[in-house]
Every structure is written in structure tokens, then in C-alpha cells.
Image: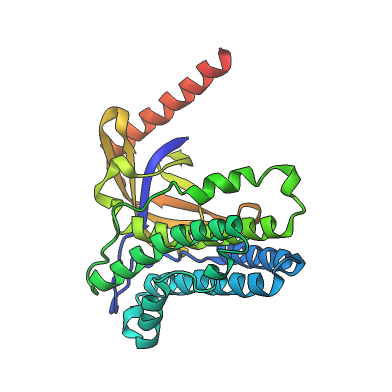
Length: 296
């Protein structure tokens, strides 16, 4: 049933350079998706004919920039502070100026230039948030950004590119797959950011479809928990102004390759009786609503 949920490891990693919950945001499924998106981008870039040399260099630069953000996100998730690497920190300062090769397109291909500038805008939004978090965070606290946006102009344009007339246009297809690659890395950073931010804000917890009972929950995640890991499970029911908290343990993990996600099954351990009773009531209420909906 759909439920607003927040699930996090009960204990963060110890002896860190920077605070980390211990969640893995680049599990097998996500890495496979990244590899697929990278290969598809490179496949279409090779088919570009007009301004091929310049565009190939530009795509390579943007891919490197995206992977740079991904590497930093993965390091933080392991408790490694990228700021402690002078070379990495210097590279962040340089990358915050945007894509260097894109300006060469401004006069010869203004429309294509505009597309890449919009991709740059989205990328820099998250790179800057990433850099600011590193600057402010410590071994005891990861300072997350409270206002990461969802809506970007480039996403509106990419919707128009779904038109079948663009299905064999190499530049358009290369941009689509490049943007998908960026989104995968951004989603990993956003999850890490939100896992360090939203615990105290139930009204902002994502609404997910879960297989849920009074004794446990199973969810699809693009992040990874370890088998037998202890986790805290929070469930919010805004219509009742009610938040439930359960201590749990991961008992099963199944790879869902078609969705590049994992099905995480969690058993509640020594749950509070009142919380269980309320959860049972909500499950029964949902099942009744489903039956009434079917009858209608």
C-alpha cells in the first residue's frame, strides 16, 4: 500500500572523516544503469556528423564532470571527506565555473548551445549544493541542503525530444542519454542529502508503494542496505497526524534487474503494541478502500 516512509540505518559508520549513515547509494543495480546510460551516450555521440570533433570533446567533458560528482557522493557515503584531497577540492573550484568547451557552440549552433547551458545549470545546482555540504559538514554532522529543486527547464525540453521524429537523430539521442546519466548521479546525491535532512520532517517523506504488515515492510529502493543490518523505520499518516517508529532488521534483499533496484524486506523487532494496532487498522482501511473502489 502507499505510505510515507523514512528508513535509515540505526547506527552511522564510526570513525569517519565526514558523517555518513552507512547507506550505499551505488548498489549493483545503479552501477549497471550508469554503465548502460554511459554506453548509450557514447554510442550516439559516435554517430554525430556535424561538428563531430567539438561535440565529442564537449560530451567527454560533461561525462567527466558528472562522474566527478558521482565519485564525491560515493566517497561521502563511505565517510570519506573529499575536501581532504587538495587535488579534488581544487577541481571542484574549477568545475563550479561550468563546462569550458560549451562556449565554442554559441555562435555556430546557438540552439545546441542553449541545450547544453541548461544541462550545465542543472549540474551546477547540485555541484554547488555538494560543495557547500562538504564545506560545512563534520565527522558528527552532514549539513544537507534543504532546498534542492526538482523542476528544470532542460527536463521540459527533453520531454519534447520523446517525439518519434527524434528517435534517429544522433545529437538529440546523445543529449537524452547524457541527461539520464546526470539524473542517475543526481538521484544518488539527492537521496544522500535527504537521508541526512528529512528525519525531522515527516510531511516531506516520500510516498512509496510498500508491501506492509504489522510485523514488517518490503520496499523497492535504488539504494542498498546490508543483510541483517539494523534499521529505523518511520511511517507517517498525515490524514491521522500520526508517525510510527519501528526498530527493524533487514532479512532479505532481492535484485530487481528490470528496474535497477533492490527489494528490501525488513522485520520489525519487538514492535510497540499500540503502533502495531494502528498499523493493522491502516492496512485494513486500505484493503477496504480498495474493495470499495473495485466495486465502483
